Length: 440
Image (cartoon, rainbow, N blue to C red; front, side):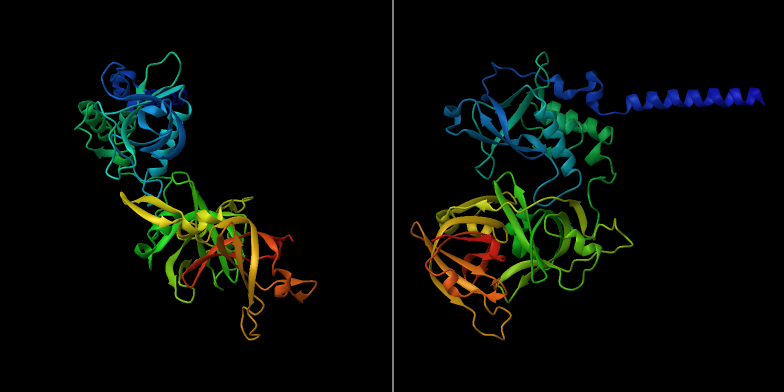
């Protein structure tokens, strides 16, 4: 009996050793320095290419980063919007794809801990991508003061976090192709054939609110899933918004939950929660706007990818302090599907929370039809710095009495509300009386 126990113990020890050897040999290429292709190329400061030392302004996704430049005279701008050469990482913004979040996190991790970052052009010129807004560059970083610069583009490829994008047709082409081959050989990430543990595999299209807002007609009638902060609740509708670092804009949408949710489902979409919303994009004929509807929560299947999901609590609306002239007149160019499209600022910020100060109320119209669900609602025509702004309110009561137009007529007000749309005009919707501060 003791002999058998000893043999079993020995076999177990051998198995552990073999497993350790296997794990040591099956990691990413960077685990073995001789196989680290990203470190096999060297940054040549005398190569004749354009080079600039930079710091990170904004992380966008795995293959796009905005950098502050050390010499603004070189480009005529303080910010270089970088599109990484030779790599195409899965999307972590817009249309969310498998391994997109992992690729974005990888890029951010490397650059956040770097002591120095240099961007390099592929030749003697700063070259723009097809949109004309982003520079095509190699990104080099030093992980420590005594280390050499590492080529992040190649490091992304060799870790299987991107597919090829003209990877062989550039100054480091042979190394890029070798990195892709190594990642495929080791079956890493996008080449693994395995599901991404950070991706939801439901029936909905994984997107962000910027993607929906800038392509509404494309998503009409389609089931989508996105994440955002619940900012307001009004008439069986909640408003959800999220921030996009690339454009420095909050994007939002109205989410109609109707009477289908109860209990835990309603708790998930409480104001102040960050939630994953799953529903269908629909055009709301009565309002002339789009919304998301058809929400569900199956209490017996909390991990169902088509369920609502609570992400975090303790959030609030951004209430971006907005200049009236910007609200009325500014145009914003957005890259969507690698095309440059132009939108009005108000259109992009539809259904998000904003704040505006110093509005002089010049006229008040009141809904006086007592049979209307909007009875007592007001439309405040305002003026500020030569700009006309319209504020639409819910019916407001004070001490049990319906507030009349005299409450606001000829007063100066500060408002916090939602960007809304009515009969061809963008305006501010105020849901609570406490969101209007009345001056003289």
